[in-house]
Length: 479
Image (cartoon, rainbow, N blue to C red; front, top):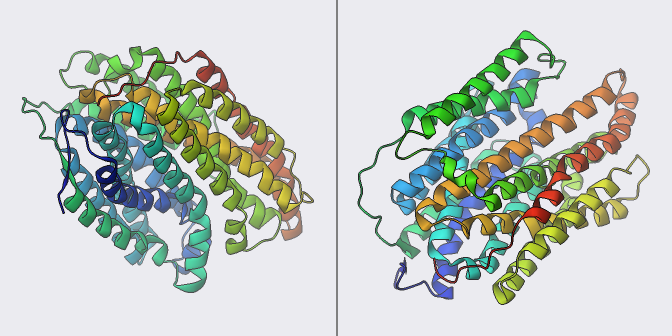
């Protein structure tokens, strides 16, 4: 069986791309699944390991921080070194983190494992996009981007369902260990099926100072988004809040100064000079709340507001998956056939945002079938947009900068998801503030769902304006 080799003169065949894509998507699925699969297991884990509310938060926040902070760094490394080797290293880091998290006998060890997982997830997210951009021409990338979007949506929405099933059958440790076999299989498939064109030899200077500034500013910003305004941590107007904001501002200013002077910037300012890239970042960041935050808080509404169990709650998110699957695959095929892409960004944004506003009318009596219709439309809209934004950006940059550009989109998408989580969590906290009994808590969760989903719709609204302003550039037929 001949290996799949990508080069400018000998493009990979459809069969070769699919073989290589199998390994890429297997690793990417394991990474994306790990973010949300733990949600339904956390209450059990905290009870068994005698954890605190602060440690509960850090199990989620630690992965998100490591993911966001390292994604741009992985993307830049992808432009400098062998992408295949980097992908396998990221798989190894993810596997190590998964093992440590599952084997943890204390909450501290569990959190350390989750942080290591996050570093691997950041690499897999950035490198999967970069490799696809390297082996497939933009005009042909639409149908393959559909597979990527479907994988991301399935992992994001199915995470709570799979986590609930594992907790009730195999035990909570398998919510971490379940991704290890998938990652190992992906590593073997990649080793067998993917051979990229040799990296051009050039003198490499890694921007360590810029990477440090970027990581510091990102971590401080994510901490502020996660904890500011939470009664269990600190107020928005407080000394800790001001300190984190100061670190973010100083880090960004320092990063701008450094990146304008170094030869290989980790976050290349030239990427943001492109109107398409800048608008795509805005759209990706704001639409991320529909893709990443709504699935997580749907589980909160179903379980705490409607009294369902983890498995039933996960099953009710399936319409979101199916809608996203249809949106990504159908638009991907249409883009490859006709070469037009902006129309799907506009229609998808309008549909997803309108459905999110419609979802904001839920209460404790809304029929589950009607909620299914609403979230399926959200999934359809998100599926038409998220991966096609990546396609639009990759079409405007050279292959030598595709890693950094892809990582920038993934980075800001993660930040947007964190922003959505923070705002939606704060809105729900306000509605729960006066609840002191179990019955009142259930009523509070049900009543808080409406303004919570309304906040998500409001955050996503700028995406429609951004995609309307994007200038459609014909898709290249070469890598």
